[in-house]
Length: 204
Image 1: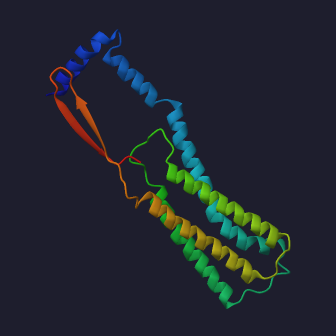
Image 2 (image 1 turned 90 degrees about the horizontal axis):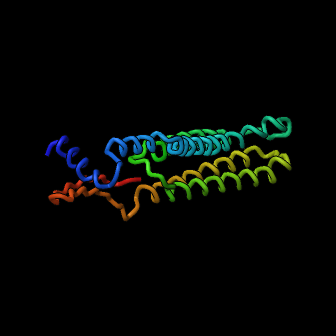
Image 3 (image 1 turned 180 degrees about the horizontal axis):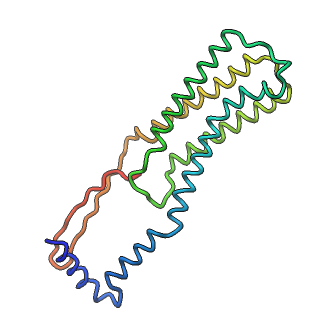
């Protein structure tokens, strides 16, 4: 059946519903798609994700830089083991950056008007985790002006290790779920009962 026949059939079926024509339905649908709410939701979620990502990636660097900025004369010198920890932090942050980009910043397959629960829970978990690290850092290191710089570097390394572990948890929750719902749309014409199925696959 051609597209023109489908349109003619739609007009014939929609006529008894009142004065609402197919053009009105198309206009209403276009107005809904162009509404500010959908764009606002899309950009707000992206802005929150970018802000959380910047907080996560700048926190270990701030942990390493603040003692040099606030009390550089009191710090003990950083030995070979401490410099090796710098390399470890750098490579782990690079791995975390690439892994977060691959998992979270891909374009979604469908833009649904709902909150993706696992992503929201992971974002809250990461935010609580980073805030708790900042609180401990402020009380135990900034207030006392800790002189052991190697201990501060190890604290930053433990933060990056924990963030990598949370990313592994995100992979399990978001990608390796056991039940993957697949969606299909069935369009049936009421006049002759002809049906067509359109497979949509997974919607996330």
